[in-house]
Image 1: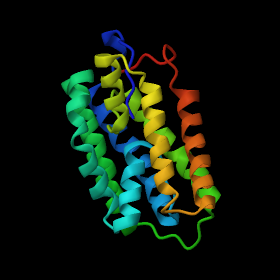
Image 2: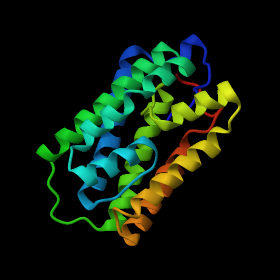
Image 3: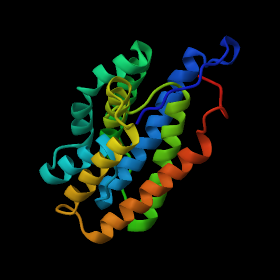
Image 4: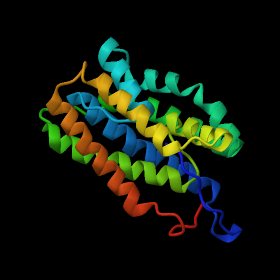
Length: 207
C-alpha cells in the first residue's frame, strides 16, 4: 500500500532515527499479523494477498514470495514518489519478509480462533501500515502501480485496486473455504478501520 504524505515544515519532519525505529516497529506489527494469518490460512488483499495465495499453493515461505513479488513495483514507487520513498519501501518490504521468517522461531500457537485471529491480526497490520505511511514508506505492491497509472493515463486508482482485489478474492475461492474467506474479509475491515481512524489527510503533519 502507498499513500502520499503531506508536506511539512522542517521543524516537524521526522529525524532519521525516528524513521528507522518506525520502519522496524511498523514492520514487526505487520509481520506478526502476517504470521497469525499464515498459521490459520487467512488471506488479505493487494500484493500480500498474492503472496499468501502462492504460499498456500506451493508451500514456499511467505517472506520469500512477498519479497520477490514486490521487486517489479520499486520502479513505479521511484517514478511516482521518488528515490527516498522507494528506499524506505524497499526496506519495509525486506523487513516484513525477514520478520515473517523469524517469528516462527520465537512464537508457537497452541490454539488460534479463526475470527479472533482475523480481527487481531488485521488490527496489528493496520497499526503497522499507519506507522509506515506516517514515515513516508509503504509495503509497495499493486497500489503503487495503480497510483502511477492514474497519474500517467488518468485511470481511477481506486477502481483499479478494487478490480485487482476482486480477482484475488475470486482466486482464493479455489484455495480456502467460504468461512476462511469471510474471516479474511473481517480482518481487512479491521485493518482499514485503523487506517481510516488514524491516517486522515491534514490531521497529521510529521513526515
